Length: 300
Image 1 (cartoon, rainbow, N blue to C red):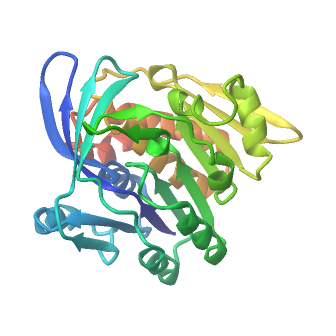
Image 2 (cartoon, one colour):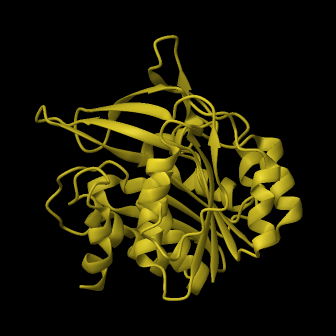
Image 3 (cartoon, helix red, strand yellow):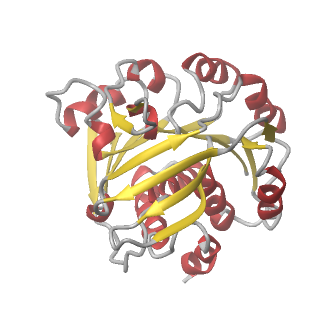
């Protein structure tokens, strides 16, 4: 199969609760590297995102270790790659500061994936400005394959000090009407729909848009998946027990694993359980510096 991947790259500076600091590639890199490590032999990945000109050559050298990743859609832009400082209070919530956020990715760049013949596309809203709504609508009109969407930072605003803050996503129906499956964490789920809705009511309204599966990730509590099967079905899956070193990127890795497995099976429960497993393994790795260990860990 051929997989498309869209979202902004970040350079992460991770400030852990114990006072230690880790610097590594972040954002869409977590999704890309994890996908490259779990897909089947013969599968290909076509990512589309930009890299600041100062970081471009070094980043491309890093990506070239993956023979299943095509670099044709990775482009260079003037200026710096997004720098993100992540301050963790605990596993489940953090304070985020972002500088040098890249411009939204244009449809003409996304069209390269369609021309390449991808079977599915994973759009991860890393910065919240990765693609614009009109671009997504144009993509949907031109691509009839599978689209997985991670709401992610589309529920975050940014203040004059570059600190991200939670905001309501009022046009969520317009976004989700143009994708097939969607994921969000507990905090993001509270930022769409009506404020008085619980998760079940949110899922009912989301699935009525034609969504095939909606997933809410819950960190160390696991994940919940909703789907239609003679009515709305809810399945709660526990997290796998792991020794957590760094939770950064677990949602991005979860998304890649779900996207991969759903592309192969169209089974929402199996896909969520597999994503839970791979995301848990990612939590045992500091930053993205050793993310290629996932290949061996998943095989075990």
